[in-house]
Image 1 (spheres, rainbow, N blue to C red):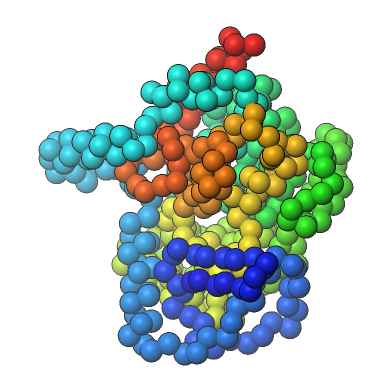
Image 2: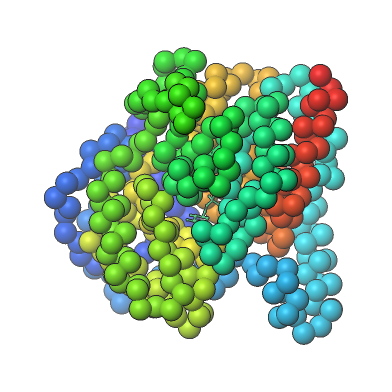
Length: 381
Ligand SMILES: O=P(O)(O)OC[C@H]1O[C@H](O[C@H]2O[C@H](CO)[C@@H](O)[C@H](O)[C@H]2O)[C@H](O)[C@@H](O)[C@@H]1O
């Protein structure tokens, strides 16, 4: 999908294969009017051949998504040779994406004399990937490591989950939280009232009564998201292992526990429901299809927004670091790279292309990195 609006308007480019739709759709009765909203042009029916190719693209993504966890991959590998091959490929890949732990000295060189700001994804970064999303708890050790860095640097968690849910897992009041892929941000009261995004914030209070800014650029989509959640739940209810998750401004359709021969059915059912919702789009994460509003907002924009709120956006003496494992985190890596302002760290145990600069293998390495960062900061101040 490649929607480009006229000059001065938001641009949204989605690198993923387009949905095999909409063939036709009805205009929703309540049409969100947010300035961030991108009008989807009416599409002509596509020839069925192209539809098949596009659907096949999604199927490939669904099959390839999310590497098996370590224990499982050993079960699948018939020979140690294959494990060695994987390891060799990983080590070759690390030439381009060096370990943030192995390169810690270089990172501290970059950080010297600068204010650091930390942005952390949740699933797959602070908690390991598990079969049931409700069980993706954070360990006490990880919580202590996050609390420690948050006492030393401004720290935010930016997750695809709803903000409330991610807070329930993390339970730390000293952080900022952005849920629903950045569409629900509870951040500090902005230092400057001028804002390049021309967005509106609402004053609110956090769980401790502290004054905060609440920014929800997709709030007009809430009724539509609630409706699509119901329709999708109904539509996939007979697919064994498929699971819905309500993330407030977006919806997840999980297929981690679905048999691979049913992946196509999951995709078909989801796209069939979405035909009636042209202002919602589908993206793909780790064994999850994510439905969200077509607005020009993502984790990258959330990082820019939070940096601005913290008064850290226009200064050369700031080093933002974003740690994440998923495709949606790439938007944040891209922003830091494009602005030449800080860098991303990709959490991955397999080689993959990324706009991150460094890598870490898994959440346990993330924890070690956070601890090392805190120890360095304390030792240097
Ligand atoms: O931005 P994130 O914090 O990484 O959230 C992205 C999605 O994460 C969760 O799903 C993923 O983790 C689950 C628990 O380990 C796993 O079961 C699932 O297969 C993964 O895709 C979350 O449940 C989703 O709603 C988020 O969109």
